[in-house]
Image 1 (tube, rainbow, N blue to C red):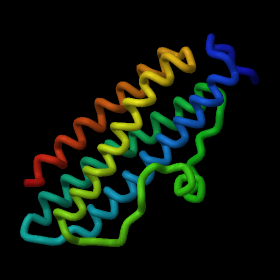
Image 2 (tube, rainbow, N blue to C red; image 1 turned 135 degrees about the vertical axis):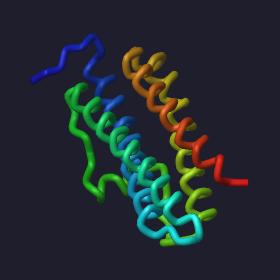
Image 3 (cartoon, one colour; image 1 turned 120 degrees about the vertical axis):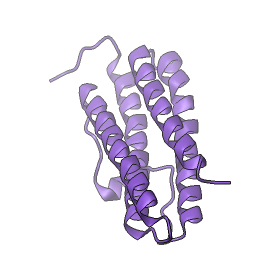
Image 4 (spheres, rainbow, N blue to C red; image 1 turned 90 degrees about the vertical axis):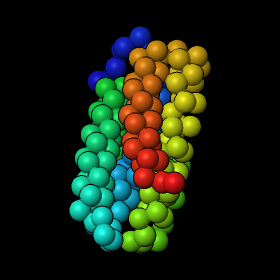
Length: 156
């Protein structure tokens, strides 16, 4: 069924494409955070194990929100692993149990996501004439700023 929400079909198509890239980033940073949770070692194991768990639980929600927003626009959310790896702005890395390396890489990922979301705020509003999509990614930006701040607090 055709979606008639006050945004042109071509614009919703382009917004959905960009949001599928955001979804890919959300799913990959989720997987990387979960991997850190599984593989952390050290004298603060329990603290970091719980920290990573809290982060990936939030990230799981963010990915779900992005996928559902894409569906609201009348497009399919591309969540297959093959699609994720084609669409993501992030890079998979080797396994590590080094806390500083894990945290630094996750911080870099969140900052990459934040920069992309900042770009999309204006693009969705100005280029695609969709203030609601702009507002949606603004909320995502706020979420990632919080997670990045929490990670950054562990790095010196």
